[in-house]
Amino acid sequence: MPTLKTTTLLLIVFLVVSNILAQESQEAFHPGKPWMDTEGNIINAHGGGILFDDGIYYWFGEKRGKHRSQGVNVYSSKDLYNWKPEGLALSPVDGDDDHDIARGCVMERPKVIYNEKTGKYVMWFHLELKGQGYSAARAAVAVSDKVTGPYTFVHSYRPNGNMSRDMTLLQEEDGTAYHIYSSRENYDLRIAKLSEDYLHHTKDDHLMFSEHREAPAIVKHDGKYFLITSACTGWKPNAAAVHVAKSLVGPWKRYENPMRGPEADITFDAQSTFIFPVQGKEDQLIFMADRWQPNDLINSPYIWLPIEWENELPTVEWNDNWNLNDFE
Image 1 (cartoon, one colour):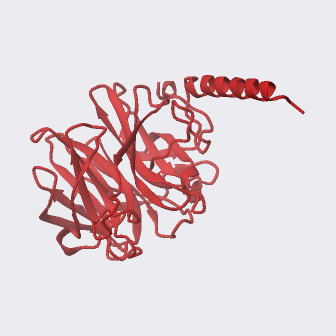
Image 2 (cartoon, rainbow, N blue to C red):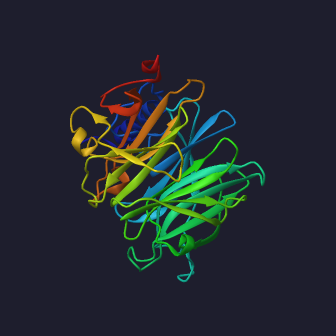
Image 3 (cartoon, one colour):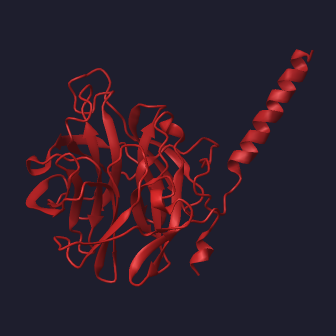
């Protein structure tokens, strides 16, 4: 039987090795594999989005327990491979069960943009109220003077009276911002222009199409808008589709699944969440998706893959191991 001294020594060695491994720099993406942060813990930022600010990428996403929603986490990175945990950007409220974001609520698909006019970072997310299942169907907003937060909750509501679930944000070059959201029990996808301070919806709110789609991820490329979505099959993955339009108000034309490779018909066993550009690399875009594990949400892996173009349409091809040099 090992002595107490031997056990203590083994524990010290284990901790030292774990710390070294945690600090090893990653130099590639491994879609579907566990992704650790710089402290050696699993990255917990589901349904997320990326903001590039002052030379640094920030990854905002749902902090999940095994099942429960625990707020919005934020991570930072200079290279997109290695992510430093910056803590909770937005935390549920304890001690007030009547608060919109009382602990026990559900916060999903957070996206953050910066408002140059107000100097505020603005976070929108899909909110379901505590104890109400998915019946509230609200959009919610929070703000911060600092990119990593903490963010202060502002309010939640149904945009122009419409149900609001899966969502994303689009910010144009002139600073105009839009909220894209699934509505009418996810049968409709809508787009609404935000107010100048990004804290409210304007009446400029349009139906994009009614095809029972969710999980919107949008990008503008060569003067056109490309929107990748999934069908509504709960946690079960399905085939993605891409819609294209010259104007945000449409008309939107649907094209079939942009995924290529093994399990492309189920989006590589995942669901779309965001598309973002690689800074300093013209027209180089990354597609983000979540491989949901409903019985263990905290450990749901991430799928990050490069977007390529084929006949002026985006395609996403499976790759077990890739890095940013593959764009060259």
